[in-house]
Length: 267
Image (cartoon, rainbow, N blue to C red):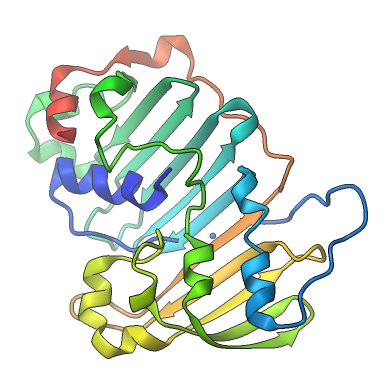
């Protein structure tokens, strides 16, 4: 599941909105048994902190340049859900999108906000409904691709492999720098922003927090101003490891089959 492409890809494809960098959550539920030993080496501790994410059972929230979002990943039920809202001062002001995946079914709800007034009716007719999508028609879409083997909304493992300097600053707290040019596959990073940053991208400041079991609960990357992008923080946090609830189907009276115009927009 490619969280950033869910948001950026769909909106860019349908509305020609420039790419927006993403990335926020809360408390975590402890697992039973003895707590694992957190590696003493700071970088190794960060790398180990992502192992629980790979199990695909957690909630998350995110904030970035112009957007906020929240979601869940639940491998036990083969489901995921994500909602994103664009800030009023962003280029996509007032827009929001929700995506739900359960087994082989997918639904999308897209609110175009004020922009709807300037778009053709076929693009806005269903925006107050959940559109049921034919997965066979979106399987090659980067925007809507769903892969339960790629469940991390930030790509934290890739980011931590690109860490060039890190120190432990407190109990479960770390700070350092990472070379974003070596982590271009990470979902939290926007390619256009990295290009605008130039050499600055090779030393982006970050902070990270782990819980008492060594699991990642918060990652914040500070991005300096570059090109048309203002300085901002990318923040992703993870919660409820092993205790997330599966995604729920939308109410039947709020569901319509996606019209042909939806697939045309996403192609």
